[in-house]
Image (cartoon, rainbow, N blue to C red; front, side, top):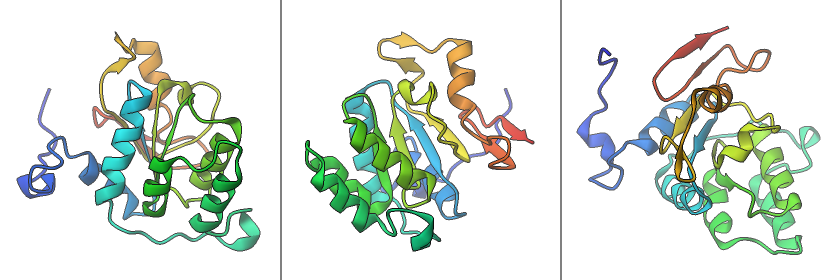
Amino acid sequence: MELSRTISKAADLGGKDPDHVVELCNEVVQEGQSVLIFCSSRKGCESTARHVGKFLKSFTTNVQESDCEFPDITSAIDSLRKCPAGLDPILEETLPSGVAFHHAGLTVEEREIIETCYRKGLLRVLTATSTLAAGVNLPARRVIFRQPKIGRDFIDGTRYKQMAGRAGRTGIDTKGESPDWYEVIL
């Protein structure tokens, strides 16, 4: 239980980011890596995506047209507009910043577009409920837990390992970080 680091008071954006989630995202995004933020509810995913999207520093992507059906985030937004559900207003606000949310309230088409953009680096921060941890392989350099809960229940050890295990996936990245700053060197 030793203190491993302290984030400066200036990083709290004048009191607008008291838990420093934006700073924790910016550190990783500016290195060209991605962040997964697990939230306990759909509403939490959406509000966290909106918050991070508002303050995340801009970044460059290295996606080439031949690599992806979406050469840029604008084409992904256009595809979302064409979905039967239309473009979610929060996604419309956050996607240009490279931030999105992922939960069971999205349609299959919306989830596929968001997952594709995240895998290709058009999105660098993805907020999600615990359903993302089961069955969807979306790796990240850093995994952050907004709350130690899934819905109203506390996360058990097995679930925590499953969710934190998204950081530093073998064959995709060489290291990953989870909320307790446990670093995995592969």
